[in-house]
Image 1 (cartoon, rainbow, N blue to C red):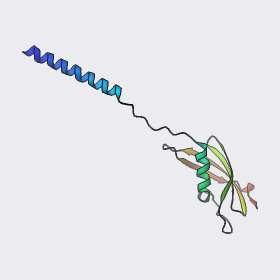
Image 2: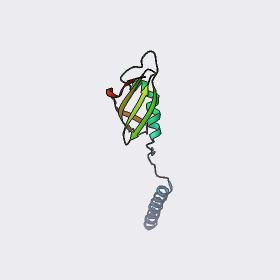
Image 3: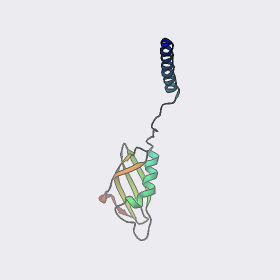
Image 4: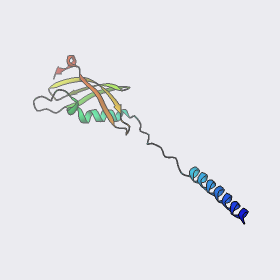
Length: 116
């Protein structure tokens, strides 16, 4: 009778191990979402937040709007105006773990500003 119990336990352990291996093999692996670094998202972010990014306020009740943006691997330049004054700034950007754009530096190029 002892041998039957031992054989039953060996069979149960083997079946349990096989079940665990098969269930692990059939369940899809969990992966972190992969975010693409999309330059369009940087352009959209800068255009949408230029009022907050600019170290100088718009003049004569104007509102800033972006006229040109160039990007090159984590840095860029932006030209923007309020209808009265044209500004040019250099900025650095990166993507967060969730794929959002983060501006790490924004510096106005004073010698490039002009009156329209």
